[in-house]
Length: 199
Ligand SMILES: *[C@@H]1O[C@H](CO)[C@@H](O)[C@H](O)[C@H]1NC(C)=O
Ligand SMILES: *[C@@H]1O[C@H](CO)[C@@H](O)[C@H](O)[C@H]1NC(C)=O
Picture: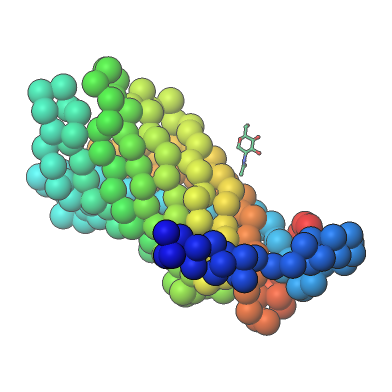
């Protein structure tokens, strides 16, 4: 009983005075609100497919899955470039995995990967990307940007992809990337001056 009274007294002491709440009619924001920015990027994603005679592959099977294919998955380290040539203008890699996550045929793949940027103005920054690849491979699809680091702190957005090359050994996806993010350093603010601003 004594303990209960002590807890109640502590709660009363900790509770802020009611006056603080009635002072909230001041419309100015007490803190400096960070600037939110939008940027549109256009890249190509190079998947060199796994296979017994594919020495240049940039993905490996890590699970085989069941009879329907469900659960079969690969780890990938696909390259991101500014053009169709896989060896020119590399701006980073898409590192993650894709795994068969449906029992229907054709299967759908679950994909989750980090876009790790290097050798560009976004070097050291990442985007966290997830979504599906439809097994029917109509050649187009959309992924979500769920977050980011560095330049892309607090990122969100989406990526539309279109398959522009589909061969046994290599797939190329053309990416239209739209990112909203909140720069967190002075240099980010500099870069932000060149791109669309939003509040
Ligand atoms: C992706 O496609 C949708 C639907 O066509 C469109 O609304 C959206 O703006 C596109 N996003 C990008 C980043 O191109
Ligand atoms: C902004 O754009 C101009 C013109 O393209 C360029 O010269 C300048 O370096 C850019 N600044 C930053 C910080 O990206």
